[in-house]
Length: 193
Picture (spheres, one colour):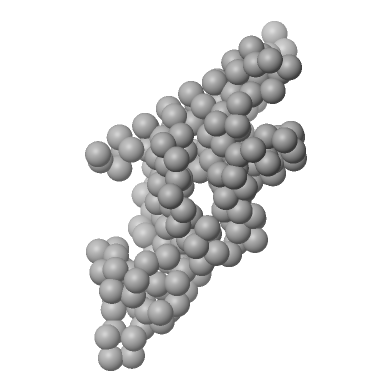
């Protein structure tokens, strides 16, 4: 599956899980969704890097549901590590045999966290050791070096250093602040009339 199709697929899954949560919340006995729905929604919030909503959801989940579904605690462990920005801890917490219920979401989350880590390294470091890079992206050193090479980064095997290159940003990447302000003004005037 291409990266673009994968992103569309994950975005659609996120929307679907949110709708299922709302629907189950309304139809569930006592208004309490099943533990599987909570697990999927918590995983989706983490996938979207929406840590505040993930935390609030965790607090809203009834204690008896948390106790009866151990996978919920494992998912929340990932969320806690993400909250602390502990990338190695996130990768460790993600090394669980996930159920079919959330496995695809957690795999997509792993890929998202790695992409975020690569982005951060490319913007924060002028050089980084191979071992630190491997730890930061959650890969063995050989894989991390190969991934860095594929990104066009310079790898110096003699000094065991990697020199990240910032990705070139295209001028059409998002709207300018003036465009955003104009669209917001148009929207507000539409709402007022």
